[in-house]
Image 1 (cartoon, one colour):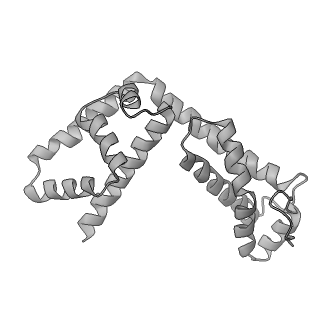
Image 2 (image 1 turned 60 degrees about the horizontal axis):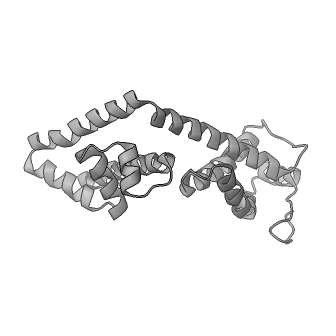
Image 3 (image 1 turned 180 degrees about the vertical axis):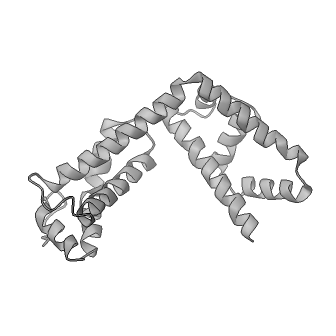
Length: 197
């Protein structure tokens, strides 16, 4: 069982695994909340340039990966602290994300191709029916101001990541790239929602 000690206390990983095997899912929420603040601080020190949402996503994914290992009977006990196990999973997720983002940022060809394809997508709206134009404009207008500004600079004005970073005072190209990615995802979701109405 989890004791009601301070946030810095360690949870008994083997007891938690046993509870999960019995189907006591509420224990997962306790584990998530117990180590989350410490993980977020730790991750930010490891990767100060990444977006804080990436830290939260990696923590969420680490908890899911832990549960999936237990549910698949691949993890029946651990010989070290649960915190170490979870932080290691989260760290690996961040490494993969960081490397992936760095490859995207460092590859000028990909950057150029993304620009060309995106410009074609947005300029192709001239050929769209009025209804489709309205749908796209409504979806864009539903975006938060920062998302709207980033997408306009990137895809309408054709600015490079470095230029946008300077214009909007982004400290890191990783953060900017993640913002663009999330903004495009939101735009697609907005379009999909508007189509369903």
